[in-house]
Image (cartoon, rainbow, N blue to C red; front, side):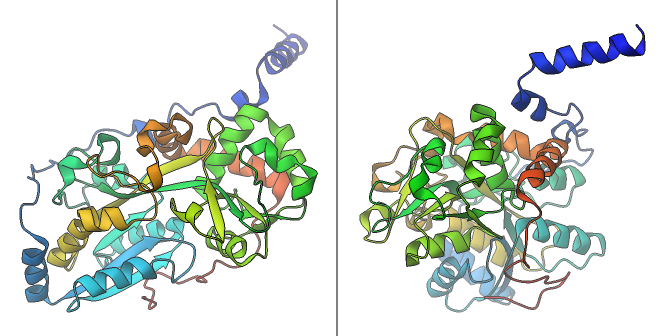
Amino acid sequence: MDRRDFMKLGIAISAAAPLSKIAFAKDPHHTDNMKPSSNIIEHVDEETKSLEELYEEAIIEGGELTVYAGGDTVGQQDGNANAFRKRFPKMKLKMNVDFSKFQDARIDLQLKSNTLAADVAHLQELQNYPRWKNEGVLQPYKPAGFSKVHDKFKDKDGAWVGICVNAFSNLSNVQLAPNPPVDANDYLDPKWKDKIILDYPNDDDATQFLFMKVIEIYGWEWLEKFLKQNPIFVRGGQEPVDQVYSGQKSVAFGVFGDLEVNNTDKARFIIPKTDPFMAWAQRACMFKQTKHPAAARLYLNWWLSEEQQKHWYQWPVRTDIKPKGGYKPIWEYPNAYLDEFVDTMMDRGLMERFRAQLTQYIGEAQGMPSGGIQGRYPDTGH
């Protein structure tokens, strides 16, 4: 075959394959195919001590706890942090919140120098947990309620466990959008021009994945039409939520929302019936370098307790606790793409290629992260 024939063959293949399928072709060498760990994983039983007993142990240990959490603003975990402090008033909790992609890099650097500050980490960057397990840096632990956690949301050996379900979908201001958009194509209606706000999808893996699914279904033409609506892009998902609640913007695409928000007079969180939204279980772990293991155990048990699972804004991870607002369990929504999000997060080559493609349309994310660049050992803690 000479060069001209080879080029003709390539053109024919390109024409026959849908653009979205070419863009989303999986890398056979992605991190999901990592070699099995040579580290021996010790067997651990599920915790049987009460929260009060674990609290007492944490106080004897010193009563200190540092958590590295994924989030968009430094105060985004204040509600959870204050609830923990109220439940365990003698504990001194330092809650550090930053983009998950910065937190995992920070943890890796600290682990390498044996100077880990975090006792517990719960992050959106799901791909790190199998890697950390493979590297032997996680401390296996099964909090009370571990057996009740859905199988999709935990490591069978207890290396990590999902503590809450996060979902990204549509949010609308009740007063400004009485008939809000539900499906992706609804956002193309001219009436929403200049009224949409969202996180940069090439700056956040979860938002990016939602765009991947929408473009896979509707093509890049959808994105071209969406951009003609003049949407406002910001860094982080908290600002779009705040602006919709305050009435600065009418609708947000691909953001977090309270399942009970439909009962308020400010905003509605809307789940499409068949169009994509996306969800995942925020994974949490403790490390072998954890300085306050008793406090870490208390924190993980508190998160999986019935009191906290029922308090969480979105879906519980436990199978024995019903979601709020009459919603079905999250694993009963096929358009939430629970499994596919995990698989895609593991394929960093795919994520990077698609991020670069999005950037051709949207441009680079602008502005500093909400918390700035905190460095390897952040002093901030809420």
